[in-house]
Length: 115
Length: 114
Image 1: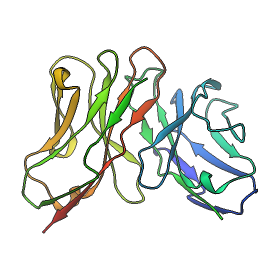
Image 2: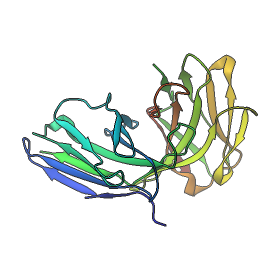
Image 3: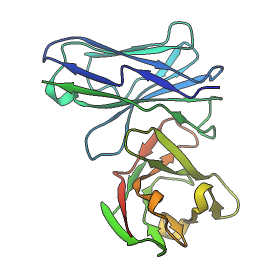
Image 4: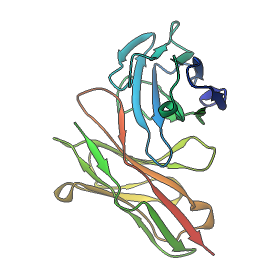
């Protein structure tokens, strides 16, 4: 089957706008992760779901960031009142099981540019 | 908390030459260790991983890495680099007992000279 897909691939927002980024994980994968990758940096963890439960949101940088996975498959990362420092590539990953042992498969990312 | 350092931001090697990318980690116990490769416009692809056992692990595309506990290192190697290996390489650590997230290093950009 297909890998992890993300949409849109590119998003330009004016400062203050709200954006929604979508992730379609590999079918049947229990775990879903969001990471933020700033230019020239490694990915940084944002949040983690196991099925529909958000088990870890310690990496979300502010309360403007919100993620959901209501039916345990597709996930949406929402950023309210975007700021220039939110400009980054947002990566989604999924894995089959609920352990770090399980390989995380990454999508191509959504590049967000906030003007 | 765990952390990962990749000391080399950029490395340039000639095609056919050997390669070693350095990775040092900080973690209180034996971590899970990973190397990923990221090509422009592509997602991260897993090259190899270490969980336990043999400290020399083989991966895809001819890569290998060696876990050295005494040096807190997990360096990536390839005996002969191909032009298609030009990409960004990330080392990552995962905790065995606290959460499932990965902590990534800052990456090393590999350029290959013909």
